[in-house]
Image (cartoon, rainbow, N blue to C red):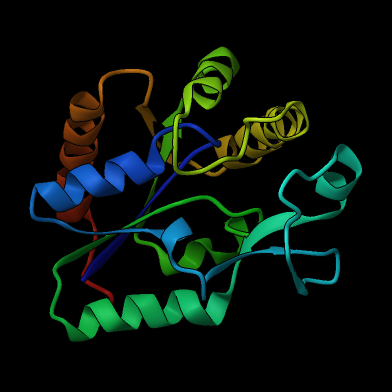
Length: 185
C-alpha cells in the first residue's frame, strides 16, 4: 500500500481534496475530522481545549498537532482493508517529524493573499481564520509552514487552480510516484 500525505497551509483545500478524492473512488481521509488524531496542544504536548475565539497570546502558546500513535493506527487500518493507495489530507505543526510514515508528500501551494481570501470566504466548517486573531495566526503559520516544508523536496501542487484541476494534478503526480516507489506498507 502506498501512503500519500496531502498537506498545505490553512485554506489550501486539503479537506476539499479529500472529499473529491473520495468522490472519485479513492480511499482518502481528511485528518482534521479524526478527533483522536488532531488536537490543540500546549508547549509540553498536552491536549488542551481551544477557546471559541482564541486571542493571539493563546495561539502563540498552542499548536494543532497529530497523535503519532493514532496516525499509525489509521495507516494500519487502511492496510488491513487491502487499500492500494491511502490519501491522508491535513496539516499539523508536528507533521514534519512524522514524514517517514508517508511514501510521498504533496504540498498544496497557495499565496498568502489566496489563503486570506479563502479564510474570509468560509461560510461553514473550519472556523480558523474567521477572527482577526486566528487570521493573524494563520499568516504566521503560513510563513513557518512554507519555509519548513519547501526544504524537504515535497511534490508541489498549485492549489490556486480549480479543485478538479488540483485533484487531477495530484492523481497524475501520485501515479508517477507509484511507478518509482516500492510497496512498503
